[in-house]
Image (cartoon, rainbow, N blue to C red; front, side, top):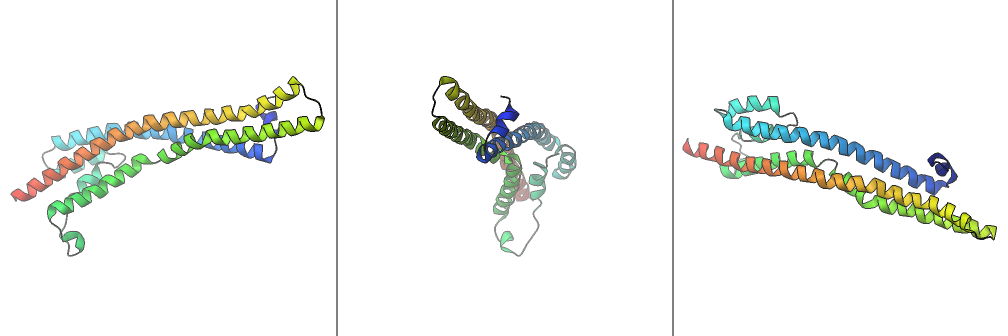
Amino acid sequence: MNLAQFFWHGDALARSVALLLLAMSVGSWVVILWKAWLLHRASRDVDRCIAVFWQSTSVGEATQKIKVFDREALVLPMVEATKIEASKTLAGAGGLETQLTRVLRNALHQALTKLQHGQVLLATVGATAPFVGLLGTVWGIYHALIGIATAGQVSIDKISGPVGESLIMTATGLAVAIPAVLAYNVLGRSVARIEAELEGFARDLRELVGNASAQV
């Protein structure tokens, strides 16, 4: 029995489980490929933008150069956030150091939100796909046992066929979950590395702007 026959041979619940596993697999692979491309480009851009910033003679010059390289807009918002204007609101009530901390923190959170996109989906697929597959297996074995009881005859061929077909659901659930878990861990390391780079740059940027303002 091929996969198509196995799919149409099952009932509504078995088909729903199969379609759900298919959707989870497609969704996770789309996220994996997209995130791998995004993080690879973001890692190169962040390293290049930070290097360009420190090689520039002024913040204005660095901002213009970073606009060319920062394709994911991870570093540029942090640099532009340091251009603090006077305000009569509570945002301007604190000192310059307090305002710098707040605006850089907000810009950093926005950058990290972009980097974290898709991680929740991978974690969810990795955690739930085996249980979805197990549900299909249990349901298939239940129907196989009902069919055997109805037939009134028990033989190895009547048991092994339906039970083996049901176990396909378990294998499918694992096949969906394992790539998602591996990708979550590998991509998570890339996100953590870029996050560390951005946090270090934010601290250096805060000290640079704060010292420059104190000297004025």
